[in-house]
Amino acid sequence: MLTGSTRLKAASAHKMILNMISTAAMIKVGKAYENLMIDVHVSNEKLKERAIGIICKITGVSYEQANQTLEEANNEVKTAVVMIKTNENYDTAKMLLNDAGGYVRKAIEHYV
Image (cartoon, rainbow, N blue to C red; front, side, top):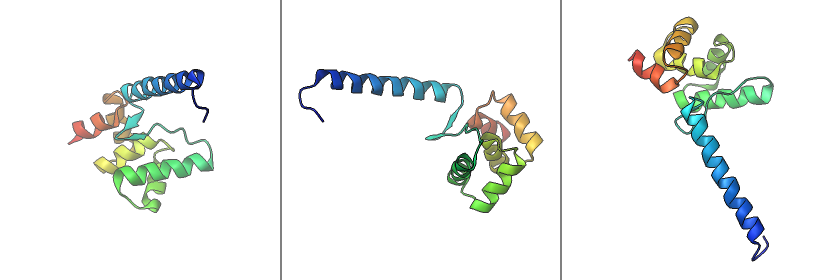
């Protein structure tokens, strides 16, 4: 790190502010649940592993159950989480999510 570089300090502050704004925007539009970005588009094996990890962390289920539910949910992480948390099938979980505007927390809370 360069000492006394105001340009680097300004860039760091700028980046921090932009990160806060984008994080707040993602939370506002329902792409986050708890402290995780949940709206992962599963397009390759690496992202599938990440999605399974997210499902395991949020729901506490095994890797195998998370993988199976993710497949049943057409690789939709949010739908898989709602399926597990509400113990419902894909169609019902999808309907709950749609009724909640895409917010996982609202979908689960309205179900209970």
